[in-house]
Amino acid sequence: MTGGRILLSVQGFNPQRWHELLSRSRTVVLEPDGPRDPSIEYAVVWKHRPGVLSTLPNLKIIFSVGAGVDHIFADPGLPDVPIVRVVAENLTQYMTEYIVWRVLDHQRQGATYRSQQARRIWHEPPQPPADAIRVGIMGFGTLGRAAAKALLSLGFKVNGWSRTPQSMNGVATFHGADGLDAFLNATDILVALLPLTPATRGIIDHKLLGKLNRDNPLGGAFLVNAGRGQLQKDADIARALDDGLIKEASLDVFETEPLPEKSPLWSHPKVFVTPHAAATSDPVHLVPSMLAQMDAFERGEKLQNLVNREAGY
Ligand code: NDP
Ligand code: OXD
Image (cartoon, rainbow, N blue to C red; front, side):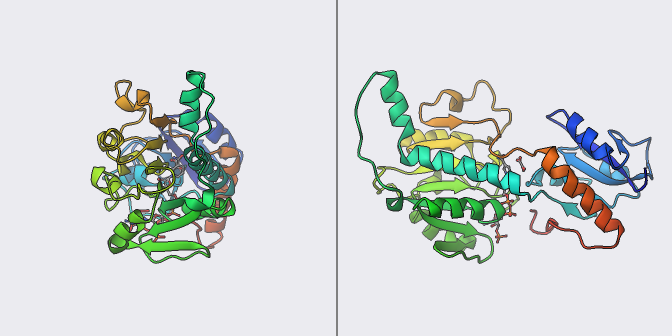
């Protein structure tokens, strides 16, 4: 086998399938061959062992197994080499499905029907149409824009909030700290698809949730977070639900994962919990593009989906 060797360093899941697929083209190792292993040129990582990358003198590219790269920046000794993140149709499709599912469940009052069913109650509440509901997508990038497109096609009104100015036909866009309050005030269902960076950590707190629009046909505001758990303060969400600032929340991500058994969010009647499963990274779809990028890089071509180190995503 030719070409640089790959270090596969992951935590929290079994990397066997990644190993198998990457190994079809290149030599893959799970640990360097001793300190300062010169044979490793690429690293494929998810929450890698901190410090391990800085020992590799010939490391050329770090590939994230996911779209988010906060797990990479968590390493204080991160070497200064390009970082490539996941941008892939099938991951985007999974996330779009999750967002549409959760928004529809809130709009169509799934929680009310589940509670009625448990009590054998036959009652049809008022049904606000999609075009009476404004969904605000915080993080208007690859995933946010795809979700917006799907929601627009269902008739929802959509707002988008980003760091820099963005636009999309049919979407009211806002950006930066100056645009945040106007975005929140115009939002009934808040969807968080932000990356975790120093600027976004803890942004979804009690104060922010209080700025959402509650005067709408659903009779309250809603939160869907499928970005990162540390965007939110779990305790503030529970308090905002109890105070009535928000009516329900769909949470795929949490400050601590797995969500601790003692967290009140598990049993909160207004919270829908999924275990960081909104959009899974499927190696069958992702490994070919990683290998193709390694080959292209060795031919002197430009890398795709590079992370902006300064912005942190
Ligand atoms: P992108 O980089 O394509 O988009 C990120 C968006 O967030 C951009 O619109 C960006 O603004 C905006 N943004 C970043 N920082 C700020 C800020 N300080 N203020 C306002 N807006 C900001 O990322 P993706 O859409 O591909 O992914 C988003 C996140 O989704 C990932 O980082 C990851 O954390 C999460 N994710 C979660 C999964 C799950 O299973 N739960 C699966 C996959 C991803 P601008 O447009 O100006 O750059
Ligand atoms: C990702 C994730 O960042 O799965 O891709 O969280």
